[in-house]
Image (tube, rainbow, N blue to C red; front, side, top):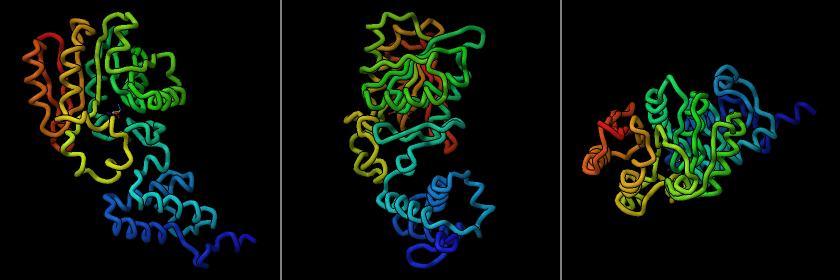
Length: 298
Ligand code: GLN
């Protein structure tokens, strides 16, 4: 019976090494950007093992049920569904976050924003910050996890996104640090009558509408459009944040945002025009200006 278990439908026994090689080639033919990595992530998900396991078990044969499940996932990936939506999870700041197609897939660049904020939050006292457009909650939750002395408002206009963020807060056991609010940008805060914030953080929809058609199918077809573009020139959310968020900050407070390619300097100009203080622009690993920190005062 054991013998029967490892014989898949076409009667071939596939080892971990062979199936990875085959899948990599298949994904390459579908123009998938990281064919090997995706094959490994999907297979380790099916096997419920870390990726490193695959490398030390290349010769291990797959069970038929594993093969059947893996084939299903490969088919989805070939249709260009993002890996994170297939597995329902994504690593960010060393933690696993649940995701679904109501939220943006966390991007590694966003870790730069989170790290920059963690460094700039006060070390000597408790403070409160807001994450505008929290999506899966990665920004608010990872900062809260690294800084148990902080409290946060996690705000999103999408109730479905907030449900994902709330579930992630539960898994990370940081619910007491986070208040979830539904609404447009800072609007729910005006109603709440809160004290002043130390930081307002956002990774807003910054892709210009004109660039949307040129995006990879994973993004264009599967990620929520409202999380990607402002349906304008990509700068609308920065304009609105610069206009509305200053009064919410303490005098030592700052606004920290992820920005798209080529946007940082234009946002800095807008901030200076509106009377904000010092601006810092940070580059990501690809040397792209990716994060802007705008202080309330000089
Ligand atoms: N804050 C979430 C993230 O950084 C969602 C951002 C968004 O939907 N624009 O991934």
